[in-house]
Amino acid sequence: MIKEILRFEHVTYEKEGIIFLNGIHFNVYEGEIFGIISPSNHGKSELIELIQSNQRIQQGRILIDEEVVNTYKRAYKTRNKVTLIEHQSHLIDVLSIADNIFVMQPGFPQELIAENQLIRQLQPYLDAIGISLNPLELVENLSVFERLVVELLRAVVCGSRLIMINEIASILGQSDLKKYQRLLRDYTQQGYTFVYFCNHHEEAFQICDRLGIMEYGEMIKVLQNREFSDNVMKYFSFDFNQLSVFPLDDNDGNLLVLNHVACEEIRDVTFSLRAGECLVILDQNNTTLDSFNRLFTQQAELTKGQMIMMGSSFFSDERNTAKVSFIPQYPVETVLIESLSVLDNLLIDLKRKIPRFWNASRTRKRVYQEMKPVFNDYLDKQDISALDIHVLYQLVYYKTIVYSPRVVVITQPFSYADMYLRQDIIHLISEIKRRKIAVIILAVNIADSLFVAEHLLVVQGGCSIALYESSEFAHLRNKLER
Image (cartoon, rainbow, N blue to C red):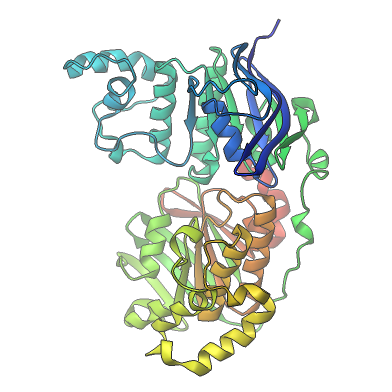
């Protein structure tokens, strides 16, 4: 009989009067990879929290390794032997790989231990997975893939038989994601069990044995591997192909041209872009995203090639940086200023263009009138801290529209966004394009970027290796995900 490693029995979990999990019921078997996607993301963080630690629940019970660890009758307030691996590192950067894996383990002897002893202990684990790492290397020097490997090894060494993987496609390039998924599959052969959280069913289909679909705190469907198909998923997701696309003027010339450009981690990249177009740069190794951002802020110099904007060298005038805006990954946390009102957040970037812009009353009045139909009563809010995530994303993107740059560089726009928020982001990027602003999306996975793109540039090892047009996208996704 197959052993259950995790079981939620009709669990209801409420915090501060909000029901995050509503009678959720599912189980996970030993040695399987159980995927979970949540179109709304409501309750996902709370589900992760309950798998890790036994908080008070209002209904049901939770079993790990076929033993009851939590029940509505009693709050155990203990932590479970479960590991979470996600975009945020749980390692200590200034310590070595070996120290993170062994020395930082609970219960590890605190007396001094010779480095060669730690190396001897770690080497069999590295040999088993066929990955070469220097055990004495500091974690801060590791690539994202290497860091995730170390976190996985740490979980194995400490005896976590249940490991949660949360949204790693947002930080791993396509090739590294496939390698990491192969590692997970290898460990299932040794009895390790994984709960794999992701936002796209295509990713889940590649790796999962079963797939749970969670909506507003309920597990509404569990798909067996034989049921995996795009047709089945149509019942649980939007068809983003139906979203409107604005036609481009074929008479527009190139706004931006990069010709065999090299800069930091960028080795040789070529592309051109017109006003109102969107180019997705898919970095399969996740090495060039920072370099592209530094390139467009003129913080890094070209070592080769040409970068032309509006017919002249981008580096000929430092004021050209004012023609470019940036929307970083997780923009709500970094772009918006909580102490400012909604209107002032929309306006603040204009200080790059308008001297003494706070006193420019006509500009404030014009922006207010233009944005009132978009934000309605939210535009009069003095406090943005109470706004929901959809309004905050709208504020981020319309802030760019108000500034009206020539080009906007967006890094990983769909990271950690649920299906409803991804739909909003697609609409917002389309609105930017409608304003004749060129869009460059920097990505390590396709996600939903192709729904707004005219071009896809694939970069590997810092070099352009392929350029695809929108007419080729229908067959491209399967090719890149194989």
